[in-house]
Image (cartoon, rainbow, N blue to C red; front, side, top):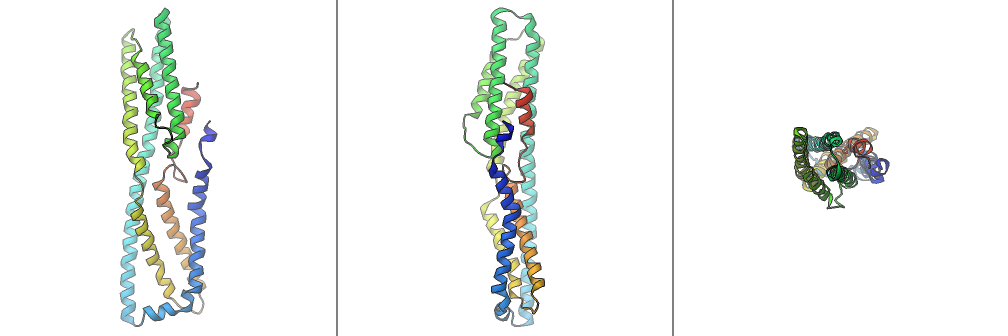
Length: 279
């Protein structure tokens, strides 16, 4: 089960964003410089005096500062959102583990039960574990890869709550365990409702477009340089394009926490299926 959950699209996304996109952007920009910037006509048309050069220098200093501020702010925000989303899944895995622990309390008291009461408790506990198992499977197939293919995932929690309501208490330990089971199911709904906001919140396409435009403004001055030996410009322009593209790719990665390098780990849920809720 756990080996088939991670789709191949995640690996493709990682290779595209982290490797191919920066390399291709670098090749394209250096090639454009060879055919456009190397001719020197931009430097003749744009900069005609020392005052023109000073104005352009101030302008690009401001653009670079604005770019740095925007990227720093977005990186911090996206990393905080990712950390909160990741913590939500970890908390949910702990809640699911706690549900199974309180079910053991009911199983320990089954020795003193007989007849229909015993059969009813066994059936309820079995169905609770079955519904939680189905919930985790759907979670791995949908939420943890960023898809909403099955809208009935909450029904599994409701079905489990229904079975919890059928559990009859025999002593104070049962009463405490029953109360905790209801609380943990309530926590599941709270985590899912809170997490849905984080899942739907991603990097704004308008901000992404704004950063792309700023990136072009930062790269543009290189096309105004005309030198006898352009190797240094090739290297500096290529490195700058690579770093800018890699940085934008990191923002895209953080804004899509269900694919690529920055993704939600699934080991805790897979461990629950293998040990706690094995059917």
